[in-house]
Length: 87
Image (cartoon, rainbow, N blue to C red; front, side, top):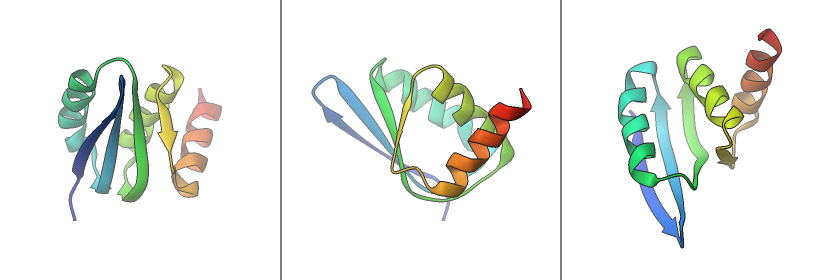
């Protein structure tokens, strides 16, 4: 399964639910969805099955800029933590 993005709103907050596999090639579309979502947004990562290192770098930058992750799988959280330790 490739990446599917579902967008939902809760007042001024937008949640982008990411589903399936995310590859670096998907980041342009993901960035576009983020721009449309506005400044108050979160990622729901519960249904993410696979990511690559480029996606981890992107998620690390998002987290550093204040984006919250809902239901983040442990392997992604650990990989982000290791990415931060490399900086």
